[in-house]
Image (cartoon, rainbow, N blue to C red; front, side, top):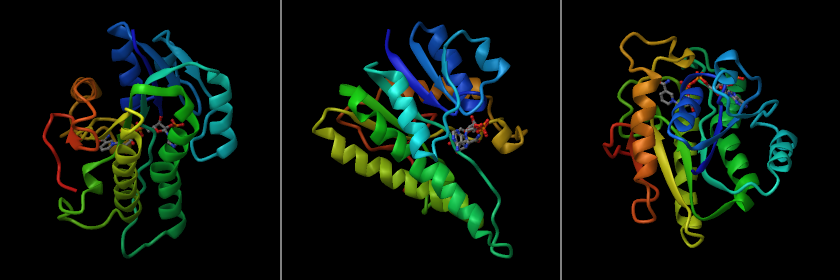
Length: 221
Ligand SMILES: NC(=O)c1ccc[n+]([C@@H]2O[C@H](COP(=O)([O-])OP(=O)(O)OC[C@H]3O[C@@H](n4cnc5c(N)ncnc54)[C@H](OP(=O)(O)O)[C@@H]3O)[C@@H](O)[C@H]2O)c1
């Protein structure tokens, strides 16, 4: 049984990660701001009241975990706010950086003492953070913050290699969650997380720092 910590675990992809991990016999530590009925019904350990943009909140999480060793840290929490060129909302762009780029780095740094050799770190980024794949523009805050997150993941992959910690930078596909208004063309969280867990299971120090689609394709930066 391996121990996984998942942020943004009260709904969407994060909650589904916890469900599938629990079902396969792993231990999921579900971290969220506010718990949900859906999460509570899973019967996993829940650490609520944690906002990843807050230094004090993340320090509190570190304190609550004591010396619990983590096999996998999944930085999943994120936000998507629409920002267009005609309506450049810098506060929104700044907030998306706080949650999507700085939050996962803050959590990773705080929980580093719990990550031993052989552990893994996952950054849940997005293909919208791929510069090469940007064929439609817009989404300034989301795209800019996710490309920054991917870069943080790549640097972590280099910096943590000597500590024998591997890093995956993952795109879940277009998934039917609240973030996408349950996009009719999207895949279910169940299908997405099946693929994501396959990528995490196959993550090694040899392929650390790769940007993968949940389906297994390597994505362009
Ligand atoms: N769905 C897609 O098609 C898609 C595509 C590409 C990438 N992704 C990425 O996949 C991840 C999960 O997305 P999702 O679709 O499951 O989205 P979601 O349903 O909107 O869930 C987002 C999660 O992030 C949490 N969160 C937001 N701000 C937070 C903060 N300041 N501190 C702590 N938690 C915070 C939310 O908690 P609250 O309930 O408290 O707000 C929620 O649990 C995100 O990083 C997203 O960018 C999703």
